[in-house]
Length: 454
Ligand code: GLN
Image (tube, rainbow, N blue to C red; front, side, top):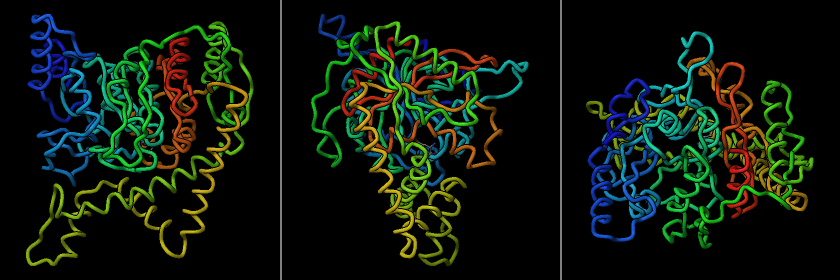
């Protein structure tokens, strides 16, 4: 009830698109009844969580924060939300996000930007971005509206908003969480994960979300470990790699200083620090901005005014006009930009020059990581090259916005588990995050390094 009240009072943050208090209350009631009956409680019994609007939840509108999905109410439950509910969690509501998860600031939502609960030391006059695309999730957890929220991460959308708002967030190995029932952006990169106040809560929540699902052809058939039980901040015998290519021009000195501090903390926890090289790092971001839009242009072809949500039907118009006008009215500017880039790089004359080339680069990036694991167990980097920025400060410059993902994208391209944990505050009083990247299926190693920093 306290959380429901907080959500209803925090309208100025615009974190929730839809509130579902009855859902959360039903889970709490079920937990109370189980407790009264002396039954063993489910791991998330009664815990009220926020659900990113990218997840389909039965009977509740799912719009991916886009006008084109207006009125689309799924008749089915995504695997991940279903698993969370089966573990006892209840849903406080659907969380705002960048439209179709395309963005790094939550400003591409069709339903208005989310405001971070954090203020900058400039008299507190600037509304700050909570990061994106999981900006409703990060703001809701940071503002204590819910103890945990789902996120999705295609190229940083869990880690960067976690860093911007001083919370923790983990993107597991690609394939750990089923994509079934999650509205698709770039299917070879999309991965769900947990966002919460600390590493332990992230571990508990992720455990409920993960697991093999035959309904997703890329789901990993691997047992889900008990990550909470495996938490251990003693890093004796572990090697932490510092990839030198992540020292890029233009990163503020305080972010580099925090990075050094993070390495010192891990050393104090018993780890050995080694400098390593990931030579193809600088090609990850350009290759991502070919592959992700290519997949998006294909995935978003299904929004045609017939199958889902919104339809524009001008008088006397034919089928082609209906498609065109529906897509013109329904998609936001950033989504249209991605569809155009994606269609271009997949077109007959340019496919080999762009798309095929980007896929080759992706292989080289994955190989860089495979080689680096001979020298270290996890990698430590900053999560983002800046702290949160003011709303509107980057929204007219897509390249500047894309650059904010520079440290997050390589792990996504390689499908590796990666997490952001809070590292400290910058001179403006804003949170900064540290990123830990791990080996395939080694979420435990990532969580343990995160715990040592926290
Ligand atoms: N900001 C990146 C993009 O716009 C990543 C988004 C995401 O991870 N969903 O594509």
